[in-house]
Length: 129
Image (cartoon, rainbow, N blue to C red; front, side, top):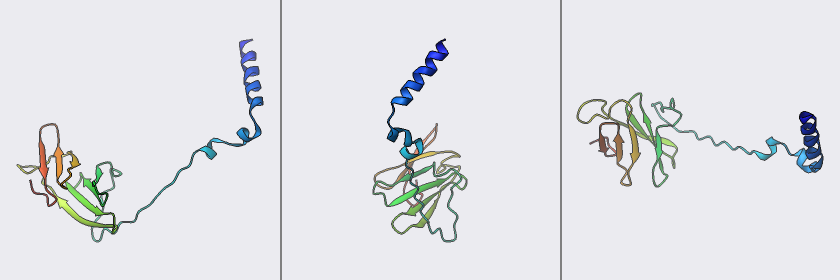
């Protein structure tokens, strides 16, 4: 009996909807836009295996810094000219090393702060500690 009352209630609610509401579906309500950017990497390959997970946008939005965990290098991409500006190599081990899986943030003076569970290190835009 409850099932019959529930079905009757749903039919009553659907009958109250206007024709415009019935025509509009979920696909009419969702709008998706996709923007593709082509970057001239020259002779290099841009690291995209992490789907830009380890990348940051500079404060002035002119550069995208993409960190390649595979090569321990930061790729500085110029967004105005749409090309790879330079690749900054970092050491994996040693006193200037950044380890295997560091996190990083861009500082206002374009320096990079790398950290893991046991250190914090600041490097300039040429890769020097």
